[in-house]
Amino acid sequence: MSDRSRWIALYVLCLGTLMIVLDVTIVGVALPSIKKDLGFSQSSLAWVVNGYLLTYGGCLLLGGRLGDLFGHRRLFSIGLSAFTVSSLACGLSTTQGELIAARCVQGIGGAVTSSVSFGLVMTIFTEPVDRAKAMGVMGFVASGGGSLGVLLGGVITDAISWHWIFLVNVPIGALVIVLSLRLLAPSPGWAASRRLDVVGAVSVTSSLMLAVYGINNHPGGWTSGETIGLLAAAAVLLSAFVAWEKRNAEPLMPVHLFLHRNLAVANTAGVLWAAAMFAWFFMTALYLQLVLGYSPLKVGLAFLPGNLIMGALSIGISARIVTKYGYRKPLAVGLVAAAAGLALLARAPVDGHFLQDVLPSMILLGFGAGIAFNPVLLAAMGDVEPQEAGLASGLVNTSFMMGGALGLAVLASISSSRAAQLGGTSAGLTSGYHYAFVGGAICAVLAATLGGVVLRDTQGAPAHERVPEAEPAFGVDI
Image (cartoon, rainbow, N blue to C red; front, side):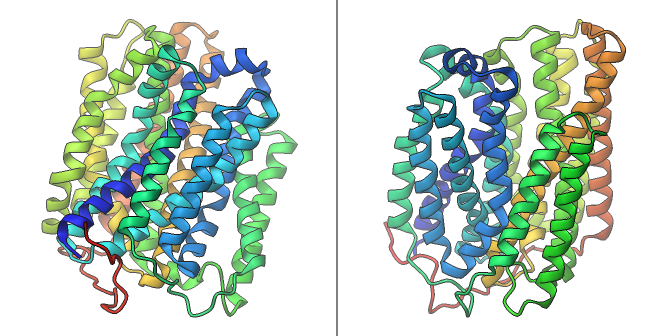
């Protein structure tokens, strides 16, 4: 297969991934319009977001394993088809139930698609330099797509209507499906057996769904019996899942994966880093909108400098840095820079100005994310065998998703409590956001320390070339 075809295929995969990432945040700007149009209450409106997050977070591991069993291209196409059709259903929804149900299906399709996407990239690019570049591009799409969602959500909702934040996925999804079928050669799953671990799938999916619901909603407050019960049930199911996987001959998630030090460390660092990233994105957006009075469109534009820097580093420079210096140094430097950016945001005043109080942080955070994501992703997936690439991809996505959800829920709760203590004024809100930014900075420092000290460095990482020549990732040049 030609080099040109591989890179075109990467961009197609990135476009599919971007659709999934955008749908986490693009809805946020449109929620007031959706509430007014369909008559949602404030509590029921949360399900427009939570319905997606529940099924997305719950099905990531299952989607990755299904890709390993039945072929990554097949599951990518199936997942993206489900996502595209459900996007059409979302856009055409006229009742609350229709929209929430369609969002749940969107989450399932998004989980299956994103859980195999990184595995496909690892299979396509076997040379270490090209693999580092490709993972940098994917890392930028996965990390920068959230803030792009705020910008697009504001533009589309203001210019047309909220329906089109979903309907725009339909032609894009159809195009990606056609191109992926054209570029990606069909291949069987890597696993020797096609048997699916049903007990493992049900237990881990139920555990993740309960955890996501408890973390995002914490009904009755963090100390309420309902919240504690949900999280306890999630922990019990997860423990049962691990116990079952240890004794099952054909497990959904082979426990030996976590014997790979880099996989375990990178996923742990990913949880902490996602918490810091979510603190940056969501808390900064709230500060800009509720304290400084920015419009949704202006909030999206405020993130543009950080996104541009992140993209420039992820797509070009980061790959060369990882190839030359390995995982540890770039990861530590990037996360320390991000921590510094969050620490600067913790000093932003009530009457702050963008150029002096926000832009320096955006630059540092863009630099940090652009440098750090590549080594995190490569370290997490560089040690696994091809038949487990989809599962490793699902683990990476699950770590980021759960880390972001948990981190945001905890830091948002701390922020809200601090603001309530000060009467909910602009000064109180700002002080609450400061607490969240400090918490995010601490998470970034912990991730930097973990990655910089414990990761096993691989110069020119990763150099594995495990794809058999008899089963090429692609079969058609264009």
